Image (cartoon, rainbow, N blue to C red; front, side, top):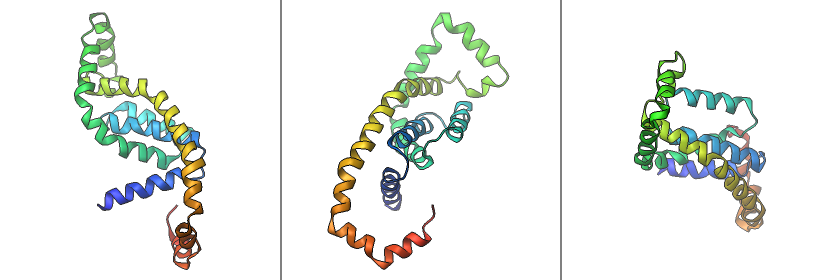
Length: 172
């Protein structure tokens, strides 16, 4: 129960952060790769490097990761099927052999059908997911958050001394 409440708190904090809708959406879309693909792989290290280089919201990356973990487990049979079909294409056999025998690229585990299928799925779904998330974050900030800010309960909590003490000590 605590984890669910913490996830909801992170979601609200991320949606209301100072980051632009583009930064939040990019972070969540990039974060889904960690939940959809097996975690310990070379491509995840490269994605982590991209996250550090570009201006995306790190809490959004974490949120995208945590939200997509159950989806990744549920879609593993689909990823396995897609990856197996790609590995079975006869014209790609020399390419897969070269990738598997390459010194560093072999750590990417592209010979694993689930890794390959989930990475291809994410690469296809990342940009449409980014567009949907960008729209959703902008829409949330324009409508829902404005209504919440106008509620008497919200204003009372924000004006309370307890909330001010919380803001003073909360980790950023």
